[in-house]
Length: 216
Length: 216
DNA sequence: TTCTAATTTACTTTTATATTGACATCAGCG
DNA sequence: CGCTGATGTCAATATAAAAGTAAATTAGAA
Image (cartoon, rainbow over all chains, first blue to last red; front, side, top):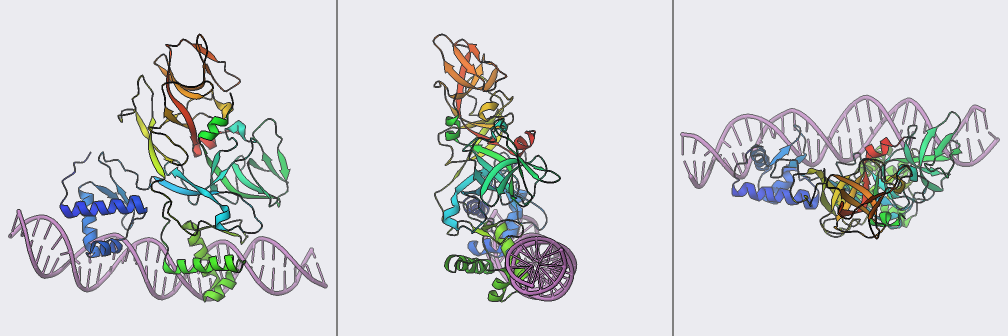
């Protein structure tokens, strides 16, 4: 790994400021924003960044990109953006829009390296209709918003504008089939207008309660 | 709570307008209605909505629906760090190796509110011996370090100092029983000295690959 | 001097905002 | 069924603001 030259006082100070901004505020300041807060000109900040990059304390991407990766002592890309917060949707309904508080069932922190994609959301699973693929009641399903789905994908679907469920999706010539993954349940057929795809399930998170509920 | 991407002045202004319309007038304006009131074109409003959705301030539903969900508009900052990094252990050998980075297979970011406890670690599950309780091959098992376990708990056990497995634990009068949760497997008995408990499984995390591997 | 840090000024690139026009979609109506 | 009006979407484009880059320059310190 690259040797890291010692920093000057100003460089160290700036690096500290940068770390704070990124880790605590989750926000990479622009050159001019940082310049304003440090009391210097924006170009000074640019030169500072270049110096820090040369010395191996951070890595920047692209020519005109703003994204910055802080490097930890071992030179690995440490996780400034390692984590991310997604909303846990309490209910999915279509009818009248629900206002924030009612629908805000909290937030979930997930690992960026594990789940890619934008605007993910999470949904608490009810019922055991998908237990054969390891999705149990109480699990949090991490979802990627989607209006359409491919055959065989596991999706969150809104049925007749009432009920939101997690099922495996199949598009048949004359109907839509939603298949539970549990021998005790039968697939159900729906007309094309009865089902509204809300998203694709891309992950599962189960907490201690979920583990405890599994009976020997 | 993580700060979401900062808004520009116009975006903030529009969001305020939207909140007022929804809360006080109980009415979601159409693109052209809003456009008229804001003095811009209807497409500008559409782009604004898209920008706000990208930044995570609201969520829209359906392709041609106009229902809008506002997400946590008050933007309160709740508590300090919601997230935590825990090591993903590649192999478990005798003793507790989790201090050094020797066996590191990476790290995993988890939600503090979901998993309590100290010195947690994660382990990648191999095999489908626990599939009846929703633990599949490839899942990450979040574990709390433990040297003992209660009857019926799901644990990570090291068998004869060689193999680390996830099983349900039972302490019998004259032996230890490790029970897979899969009809195709039989429980196995071990002498007291053959089994070393390493931790208790308190959570499961499954990523996109894990979901994809489940076959219809 | 040479090096570092900073400034000013003038660029290029990217993003945000806005416009127009054409095209789906839906609901109601005859 | 097709018509109609209101709506949401998309594509192409234009303009302005904001952000990153580069060059020339200055001042101070080793």
